[in-house]
Image (cartoon, rainbow, N blue to C red; front, top):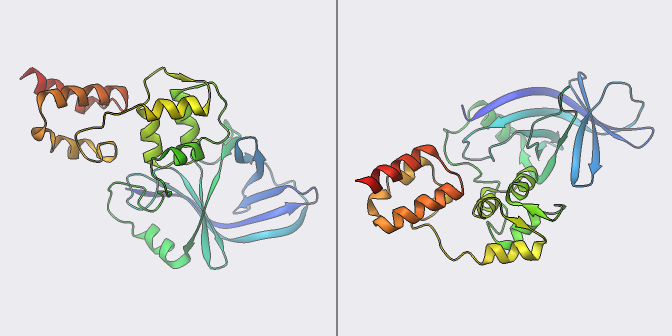
Length: 254
């Protein structure tokens, strides 16, 4: 199933006497909503808070998406406000007893209440995701730097990818970073910009980085032997999908 509702019901976001924001879900789970050094966080809390005022309240949905054609493949939190739903991405899910704080990213989108509720009950069939989550700029350098705000340099390839994912970066941005050499280290944003700009080779299959394995396999017959070799090396340096690597080996050994 592309959509899995983890929790739903009533929520309240309120401010305490000390000016802290608390998110209460079904009066059973409480999280402090705080501003961290690298963005906003939800921190597991308890019910022992003196409420000063209610900021907003209504219905909520905590939802996981997988291969959904409309939403980024990661946990979401939808909070009703003024007959719409605010959309937040929680890349690593809600806080737990073993992991007390998790990043939360408000996308800035407000979704029609009825349309969202109807969609969650009757989602589209699985397919390429992130249709509506793509930010302007795609994989442009400006978009890469936007989703790397707050990263600490020097940073290696894996650190950059993790930071971008935590900032809910679209797949185009992740793909740009995955193309960096494995184990590469970058001392500054200028260094990273140069490294990305120096790449001149592009996969011979259009939109390769966004295609699934089956779609790529369907187009391999049109490639030359040299293109297969180059694509095999590229795949190994980026996603390194076992099924594709075996397919490249089979074709190159024929």
